[in-house]
Image (cartoon, rainbow, N blue to C red; front, side):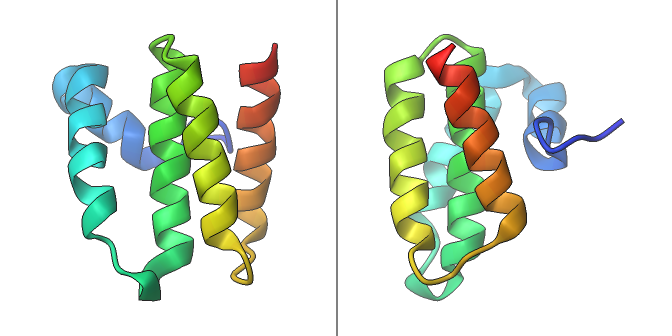
Length: 93
């Protein structure tokens, strides 16, 4: 079952090649996403931050959550904002 804290894309990537493969794919994809896709870019940043958190890379997760929050700026998405808030709480714990 899919929940806000377990988005489909990182789960699919992780199941295809493990968390490390999913992280590599996101790290490759995110810089290529243009400014016209800020909401999508913030979503992928949040996905990658979740994988960083899952694999114990908490500093990288925190930095990426901050970047995703900044990228959203004027382009607010309730779903992405909720995922960011959930991720911030899990990283802080």
